[in-house]
Image (cartoon, rainbow over all chains, first blue to last red; front, side):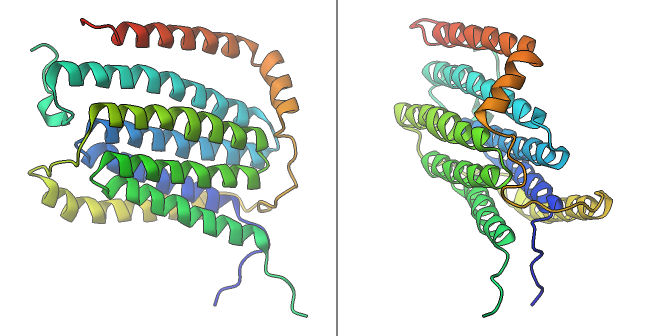
Length: 106
Length: 171
């Protein structure tokens, strides 16, 4: 059995961030429900936040925390507007399937 | 008495496993409410990892803003629209047979590059970086990053207007 290092290597955090980002991309590409696609975008933003915080630790600076704070704020604004758009689309088209939402105007 | 096993990597592995499993669950579940609950699992696990990295303010903000506000908004919309399980697309099998190997190869490549190219540094131990408090973040936010902070407030104001316009009766 391989022994664990006494401190977590920084590369483990970055690899986890890459894995989560790739899973977010996979969900964004393969899923057909517009709400799930939107949640995949949130997953990608979270993965990037983990990278920012990890590099902030690496350089012993607080700037990465500030960036991930701004990412959170942008994600909140994006969620408010995006879910409003999804509601409007559902009111007009009565579907959430992204293949059926292919035209900008009826 | 044998020495205690190192706690930092063990905690990392536990919560990284929770995050990855929840993210896989987000991608493979067909019902949006199950995906949303999986995403809350990812965010909770990431909050613990932020704490391990010494980012206590970000961990709290992650739980309050993401797992609290944003996900509640998502679940409200899912329940409001009464979104059911997703129908299978015609290309699902092709995506499965090509997508999963390509995805695994991509992950392996990224992991290899990160492991080999990153300079070897001292690893992450809990408590060796204590600058991520609200005090330090606030000081940095209101001095060096004051302009982006003000722009963000304008962005949120515009987003509120946009949400109100989109939520009107006739559009």
